[in-house]
Image (cartoon, rainbow, N blue to C red; front, side, top):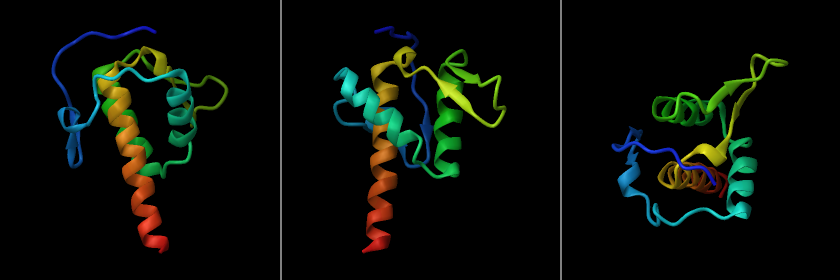
Amino acid sequence: QASAGGGGSFSTGKRALEDIPNENTPMTYEEKRELSANMNKLPGKKVGQAITAIHEKFPKVVLQNGDDPDEIEIDINLLDTATLRWLESLVRETFAKKKKRAA
């Protein structure tokens, strides 16, 4: 697993990277696979928020798909643990809000 260096953190919305529980626990392959699948289910606004945050910290990780200019590829294996955990938190928060609305 590749790890990108660099200090600092970023904040988008309500939560900063420092606020994520277990942010230093590396993600397993299964967790990354699940995160990737769930990222594809996010609403456009949340996807945009995640891509902007990732691009600010890791500009070379976000790539535009040559076949489809509307599709963006992110190599999650190049993201650091804190960023992966932040994305996981964003996904969980989004789906938790959707469940509350549906109830």
